[in-house]
Image (cartoon, rainbow, N blue to C red; front, side, top):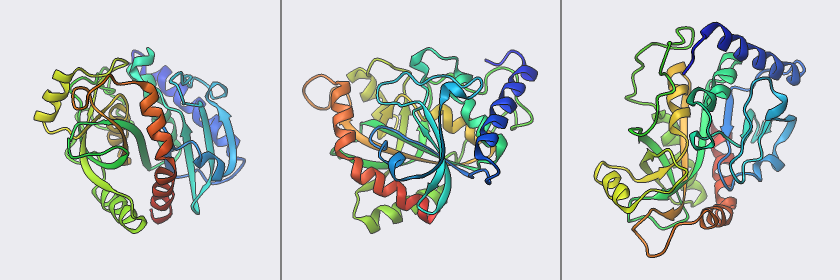
Amino acid sequence: MIDNKEEYFKSLKYAGNYIISRLEGRKVPEICLVLGSGLGPLTEVCDKYFSVPYSDIPDFPNSTAPGHAGTLIAGNLSGKDVFMMNGRFHYYEGYPIETLVFYIRVLGLIGVNTLVLTNAAGGINTEMTPPEFVAITDHLSFYCESVLRGQNLDELGTRFPDQSCVYDRELVTLLEDCAKDLGIKLSRGVYAYMKGPQYETPAEIRALRTLGADCVGMSTVPEAVCASHMGLRVAGISCITNMAAGINAGPLSEKEVLDTANAASAQSCALVKEFIKRM
C-alpha cells in the first residue's frame, strides 16, 4: 500500500528518466511484452537497443522466481518497437503489492499504451490438453490484494475503475486470428489468480471451476488491474503447462511446468511474434 504519493511518484519518474536515457534519443516503445515461461528465446531474435538488469534501474525490484532472468530489454521485434520484461515479480516473492506493478506505472508514464502479459498456467477446464494456449478474456481475483488499495493515484486513474473489459476485445480477436493462421490451438478463457507459492488444492480447483475459471496461476491479475487503471490496452496469453490439482493422478511439480513450457516454446514464440507484427 502506498503511504506517500509524492515519494512514490518521485521514484516512478526517476526510474522512467533512467529508461529514457538508455534509449539514447529513440522513441519510447508503445508496447510492453512480459515474458512468461518458454518465451525467453524472443530475447535472442529481438534487435536490441538496450538490455539492462532490473538492479540497474532505480527502485526496480529484483526477480527471484526460477526461470526469470530479471532484465528489461528495449528493441525491435517483428517490426515493432517493444519493451520486454524478461522476468516478472510475484506476490509470493514477498514484495508489497504495489512493487509488483511498479514497472507498469513507470513504463505507462513514459509512453507505453499496450501491455501483453504471458504466463504458464494450470488447466482447470478438463477439455484442455497441455500444452495449449488461452487468450484471457476475464479473470477471478478474489485472492488478490488490490494494487489500488490505499491512496488513489489520481494522476494515473480513477478511484473506482470499471473492470468490465480489462482484456481488450480487439486484441483477443487478433490473437485468435494469429493462432488460426499459424495452426496453433488457442481458446478463450477465464484466468483465476491465486497468491501461491503453494499450488492449489483439489478442493480449491473444484471451487474455481464452479465459478467459471478455465485456468489458474500466480501472476498477471495484479498487473492487468494496474494497467487497466491507467487506461492501457491489455492482452493476456496463458500457456497451459499442466492440469491443476486433482484432475490427473500424481503431484504437481515446478519441473513439469518448466519442461512443458519449454516444449511449447517454439509455438509460444511464433504466436507472440505474429501478434506483435499485426498489432
